[in-house]
Length: 145
Image: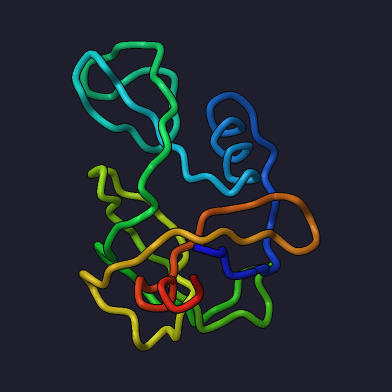
């Protein structure tokens, strides 16, 4: 699939540790999450130990990039740094691997539904190289392939 080009304004955080590693993968346009071999579970958000068994040394693995909308809200107010973007969708997406990720759905806001299949895409924040995962409806992702 060819990644649609997305860009929007926003705030770029200072990162370190596992969060920096996650966003370094995003810059490569890879959705990478962590995996714990000891308890056979996927982990997201990035951290240094497994939240289930407290094992360290989590592995970074490529996620499928597919999931479904678990829940969402349509943002009508524009916080500082996000002027001119409303309305937009902020959602919790459940990945095929079972973890949930807070993200943005790039779609017509009033067409988003709970359970809707989505696929990862990537967006840059403004004219920076800071890249974040966003999701698009599965049918839109297929039509841009």
